[in-house]
Amino acid sequence: MNVPPGNEATRVLITDDHPVFRQGLHGLLEALGIDVVGQAESGPEAVKLAAELQPDVVVMDLHMPGGNGIEATRTITRTSPRIGVLVLTMFRDDDSVFAAMRAGARGYLLKESGAEEIARAVRAVAAGEAIYGPEIARRVLTYFADMPDPKQTAFPELTDREREVLQLIAQGRSNQDIAQTLFLSPKTVRNHVSNIFMKLHVADRAQAIVLAREAGLGTD
Image 1 (cartoon, rainbow, N blue to C red):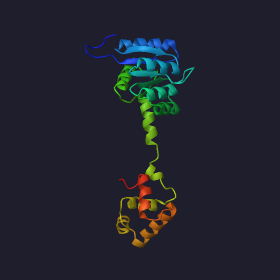
Image 2: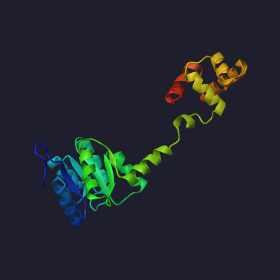
Image 3: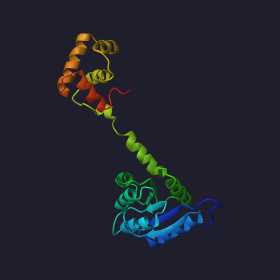
Image 4: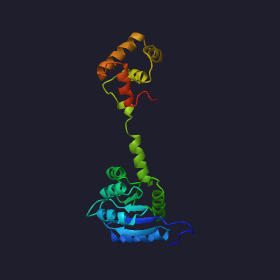
């Protein structure tokens, strides 16, 4: 293993139930200057060895006999927060990706990734970064881009105009200001405000402002 003078090699524990894959990955990482300190073939074994060896990174498969990688990731990140978990798996479905993220994994790569990409990801995770393969990153970005805006989905009982009025109420605007902003008559604004109070079951403006701000309105 070639490590530049004065630099400590990143220490890695490999977890996978396929011995041929483990050995192959071991050789590839060692050749790229990463110190493989142990191998595990199941989730429970990974938890045990991570606690004993305290590697910088655990490279974790997800679906293994005898205990899956999601539970192992959750346990390792809870009991040893300094250890980063990099998922390396064949599974690219949303359920697997987001289950791993919720469990505390800092990275997610597919097994088809090249050796240098895996090595870069290992070092990035060891440094505290979050890293995902290109396909997984696109999947994550698409997921969050498609999430509805909570400001648009809050208070579905209100009409669009009533939501506009509530937004301005949450900004501390008076009825007169709201009327001028929305080009409405003061009487129309008062009617909208009364309807909002009734639909939200609030007694006054202060309670409406609290509800609106909790939903993210009035912060722009």
